[in-house]
Amino acid sequence: MITGTIVNTIAVTAGSLIGITFGSRIKTKTKDAVVKALGLAVLVLGMKMSFVNHDFLPGLVSLVLGTGIGEFLDIEMKLDKTGKYLQEKTGSNSGTFVLGFITATVLFCVGSMTIVGAIKDGLNNDPSVLYVKSLLDGISSIILASTLGIGVIFSAIFVFVYQGLLSLLASKATFLLSEEVYVNGISLVGGIIILGIGLNMLELTKIKTANMLPALFIIPFMDFIFKLF
Image 1 (cartoon, rainbow, N blue to C red):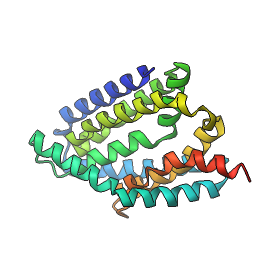
Image 2: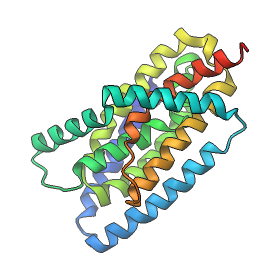
Image 3: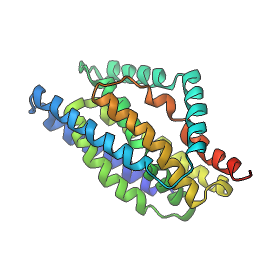
């Protein structure tokens, strides 16, 4: 039921280890340039994800409510504290530890492939989508870890917990999980969140993208409610 999640976790861990091993050989100037290039790529990915055939109003309401909940719970601060705790425990003196941890955690857990893949794995015992995601995340983690450091590897913990729980809970919410909802709706909201990540990586903004994550869980309910009227 969570085969795809296990493979995904291994891919992120392995990719991070490769990136950490060879990252020290890359000059700081080069790392900064790569991070900026990644930021642009993430920005384009977010734009592509958000340009879907889906009503914008449910997505907007989901973002407003989700961000409000995220700010109330202060998810970003909790992730930040978790990152700093892990940094302290690992003895890392990297100035990018927390940035790497939060960036990788949000990036690997926000995309529609995460939601769709976890649901398909849980409902149909079909991990094919997560296998593709594992390949993409593995490559991304190599690049992120080589530039942002060891913090990236700890995102694997959240990938395992988040996707694993989605797979286990998917069968309990089948009435909400139509193809349109869990692909288009989550792509719209997830794409906007990823846009925020890209802007942060380019140092143009300091958007607390983690505080927007509850919107991903609200969008299926909003779609369901809006279709009643």
